[in-house]
Length: 114
Image (cartoon, rainbow, N blue to C red):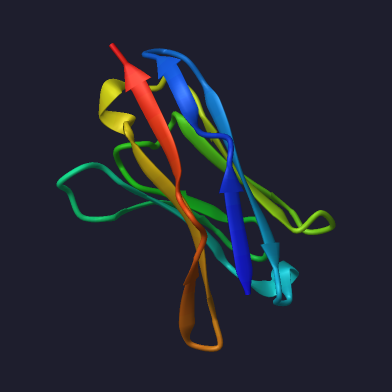
């Protein structure tokens, strides 16, 4: 199982970014996918999830600003981030659980300047 996240970068507060995660090695269409983030000196935080049926749920800190979507044909999951704040600065990871084991992609850095 491999997950490859991309799309991070430097953006000003109020701006937008879209992260992408390419997934291989499992039956993608039936897996719930997650986005997490970890800021320096902090524990990893769940940003949101998207189920196989495209149902989404988000952490309180990003509700109304972030949107997760997926394309089962392309085996991709996306994190659209709008109205970014400096406190959104973190390394962002996509993840999933497959056969009882967690798999993580290499993180992508998002930096929001004030």
